[in-house]
Image (cartoon, rainbow, N blue to C red; front, side, top):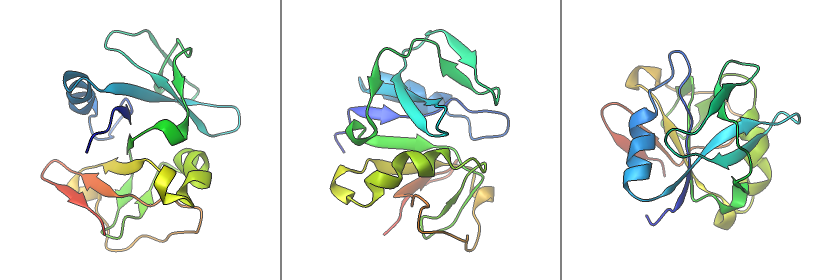
Length: 152
């Protein structure tokens, strides 16, 4: 894939360590973006370079302090996101805030404008079947410590 604009995250607590993914994005010469919480309980994505100044948000998750280089959600090529659990149908259980679902809900209806959605998780986070609602964002694939799986 020729993705140039890739959103990732900075891991928090027991989430899958995203730092190797960030390094790979930079080494490949791609543009990396991190999520920033909005007052509307959705996400904005801001360009992130190694060494940029970060600050903790209300959930103690680090975000860039310089929000001037923002990209719209429909211009992202790929979104790498954390999760609590996933199943082999592309369903994802997040931390409960619904931020990713809310942010990408309008894009999900038009698959041509939707970025590739990739979860980053440990194999132990796989569930047999997770409940899903019509507003839940479905994953296109998952990266674990053992493999990369694309969902049909």
